[in-house]
Image (cartoon, rainbow, N blue to C red; front, side, top):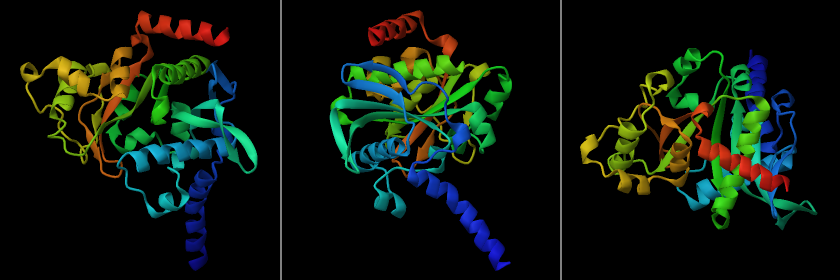
Length: 302
């Protein structure tokens, strides 16, 4: 019996060890090209090697734990990297700067300055589901669209000096190429508002509830045990322009692309945020933004 218990503990530990090493489960990796675009010294590309995943984890740690208010577990504090088991099954989309290399084990490598984590539906279904499902019930949403292919976006962050239009558009160019290569139809994920007091976020939450709420066919809700009401102010009491200014740039970017927001928010005490569900059918991406992607693609190919 003791041997069985010990064997079970080792089996549970293996995914964590794999995640901390930066290793990926081979069958989950995208087979498409490594490079998805380049502008000047910046390149957007998929992480293909363990050290590139570790660099993305280190960037996430610096942004989420050092710059922001996330609370690290002991292992996170020791490793100085943001790591979870999903890292082993996700694709990691990185923006690297070739003009700002870093020394890694004696080798000069381009520095990771921005990152996104991508999880395709077929991979999630074989490995316990999406990260989003720890906060939101998306089962009904997936069931209503059995012929569509979903992609989860998460763990987005960019180093402060690179928080500009060029880096963000390069990341979105990479996502656009990834979506096209894999023929994906809908993007989902958790987007975060800074802070864990929903009353202090009443304007932002109420604006999203009244002006960006998903229609029935795209609706999904926060898990009942974690559900926080977003409708905290009447619609007529909201100054829409002021509310938009308060929203994080990432959330505003999703809305401009045509995203919907799910029903209810979730407080993430570890990361010090209040999360909302973003649902972006690719058919909603307006011609204006499709044209921008095409323009960027022409620039990147030049």
